Length: 254
Image (cartoon, rainbow, N blue to C red; front, top):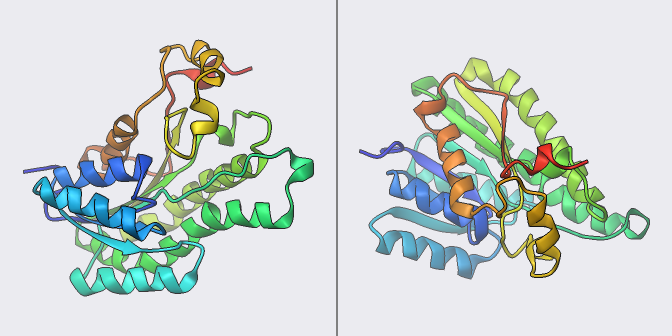
């Protein structure tokens, strides 16, 4: 029996990187996983790989910036299951520019994906989460970042969005607790993915790695294990908390 046997999970931004690693691990632990992503082709490829490995998964084309798409996701989930035990809000993007060059479109792109995407998805799935909470418990895990409180140049929109997600997570933990729903968040450090390649590319990464006490970047699989912990009964008395998984760099950034 896996840690998530018999449970239903949604992972947004599941076609690549951290989201795909989470979806794969959750399926391995027995969950039926909905892989929600705007990249429908890659999401289906990821779901097929999970099924080929013996897991249960379904890809759903979902743009978390669109209310209609999120409502469609909620409807599809409710058709399969009367409740939802796990929601992972992972979808994200990155616009790297100096503040003086960020226009309204740039800000909207980042905030609408990270912050509003988390709000829309959680709001749409709340009725299903409440049913699971009443039946034994549900968990929401939001992806924040060490960039919420440790900063680099040219990522002000990203940092602002992630700081908002931290505050939102704590507020929702308080509001959702009576429903049996736990809400926590993860603050990953530098993990090589398509989105973070601007930071983890050869050359730039050498100096960055020297500032990481563990002297290496993290892996998507390591972040997925944190998400699993926050989603299963191992963390049954934890809510409103953030776990930083960054190899120690946040204690070495000044």
